[in-house]
Image (cartoon, rainbow, N blue to C red; front, top):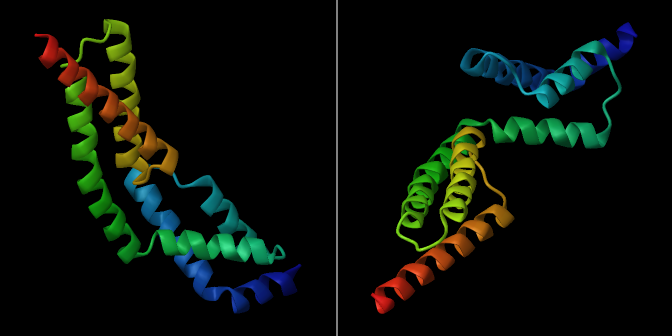
Length: 147
């Protein structure tokens, strides 16, 4: 077992150091760390055999927490969140039923929360926001014509 620990230290020394920094930063920032990153770190330091798939996952974790990537994601959040909030505010101007408005606003609010915390939204989530925006805009324009 000790030979695997030494082998991992020798072969994945940089990854071990980087994962440790990432986990420490997460603990300082939020009080806990990402479970998957912690599991990969434990696998490295305990001497577990690292598969190519695990190595690729470790490299993705390190890349995702690089300063350049974090800056890029912060810029994305600063660009997208105001648009989400604008859509959320437009919902108030619709003639939808109260329940439908509340549920739609709750959906947009959950996306804002995720965008701020995880700094990402999936393609499907972004498409859903676009659909909500288009429906909202169409409803508001219809109300203006009828008024």
